[in-house]
Image 1 (spheres, rainbow, N blue to C red):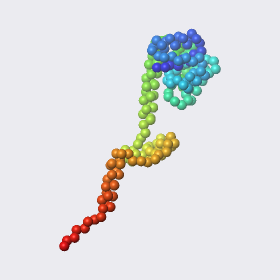
Image 2 (image 1 turned 30 degrees about the vertical axis):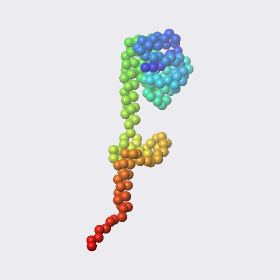
Image 3 (image 1 turned 90 degrees about the vertical axis):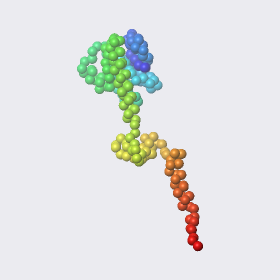
Image 4 (image 1 turned 180 degrees about the vertical axis):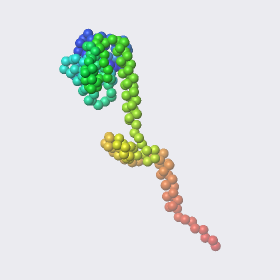
Length: 198
């Protein structure tokens, strides 16, 4: 699993990087929030360990910008020089931080935080899969939208994707629906043979 380390101090960065490697993870490095945001544009990373105090964009602003983006949920651990005050914790939580670690990183505490992060990311992925299900009527095949209105599946998909539909008949439905109708038409088209008695 890739973990993005956002840390401007070389010694702290190396220490965290080593701890992550020892846990079998793949650290990706950024030295500030701007570099981290640029990296996340191209890297599928779901876990961030970021310093709070950094040049350019600090850890909180980086987290805010990260949360403002669309895409998969990213678990965010914030590093602090000392235990954060309740006010600072509140500010960090409002910014979207998920957890805290005091620097220098204790490898055991990091392992525990990462275990929780993985579990939360797994549950988040499951929820996203469940939310991706589309409620469809078993009988008429209408789809229920987010406002609880039922509409034809063609309209539902068109509104969300812009796709247009052309209607056709699949081979199974052709055999089941069309062939019997054609047979009936053939029967109707044959002239009646009237029997005459002498």
